[in-house]
Amino acid sequence: MDQATKNPPVLSMRGISKNFGAVSALSEVNLEVQPGEVVALVGDNGAGKSTLVKILAGVHAHDGGTVHFNGVETRFHNPHDSIEAGIATVFQDLALCDNLDVVNNLFLGRELGPARLDEIAMELRAWELLRELSAKIPSVRIPVASLSGGQRQTVAIARSLLGEPSLIMLDEPTAALGVEQTAEVLNLIERLREKGLAVIVVSHNMDDVFAVADRIIVLRLGSNNGEFVPRESTKDDIVAAITGSADNAVTTRSLRIAHNTEAGS
Image 1 (cartoon, helix red, strand yellow):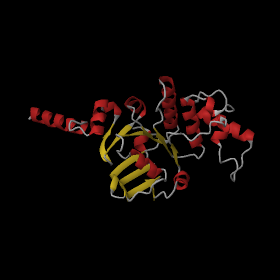
Image 2: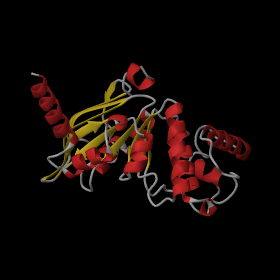
Image 3: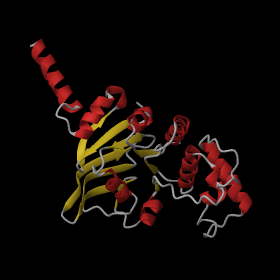
């Protein structure tokens, strides 16, 4: 039995609903993530992925259902609540300052906090974080503007680790990256798993999802529409669940089992 099955979940969402006026964005959605587990959240545009992530990030409050984080029922009223609880979110835009170097991007807003850090301490901590991620960044004193897309994603993920989160959410982390940079980011996700963190990856790229995910959760029209284990599923299974094809994995397996039962009787 692996780590992901032995530990209680870091995150457990049950029956989550969210309405925007008369529009139902989420309806009775369930999601669970264990420590050291990478869960991919997939679905078509408008499936509810972003809304679910924003509920966990404290941008939106859920209207119905329960959220348990590290065993405690909670509700995030704002992003600060989410961060304080131990959730780090790396949105697709990364929110990096191109004119600042890596160190200053990592510690932006923290250098004047209660636990003040001097330049040397920040630089040492920056190198420590990058080593933990096996990052391919030549210097922590170069401007972020000069980094590749994969390196920029590395800086954003390293920054998220400063708060020592239990859960990291990555929104389309490989979007618009080339093959080499994508491999770099997928390696980063493996490092996060090895550190025992729970990871949610939102992605449209099935190759990336199958490369790193332990489980794949499909949302369709604001509701759960299947849970899959990559080694037991195909990309066609996932696409069928995303698009709502009647010939999806659940239906196919049910028919196969029924056929085998009839053949053996």
